[in-house]
Length: 82
Image (tube, rainbow, N blue to C red; front, side, top):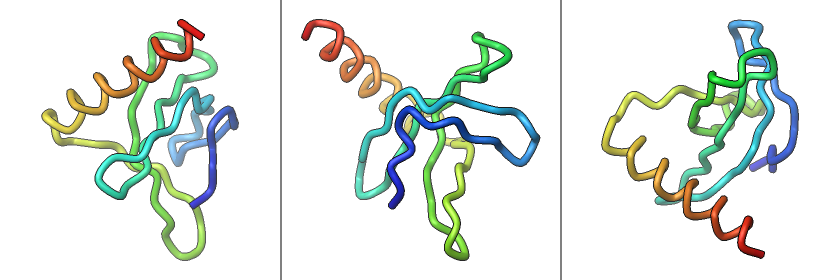
């Protein structure tokens, strides 16, 4: 699995995002991404490999999004304390 943390990625919709953080949860890798042009557009996406390419997919499950949001928040707060 590619490490995309701190990389600039372009989604299928043509928008560019900066990968702020990555984490593994239940054997999957998730990324916290920020739209380069709109700082209010922040997403959590699933990082997958399809046909040899890294693909970022939207997450629809609200419970999973809540869980991941908490985990990303804790990870960022821990980094800020150091």
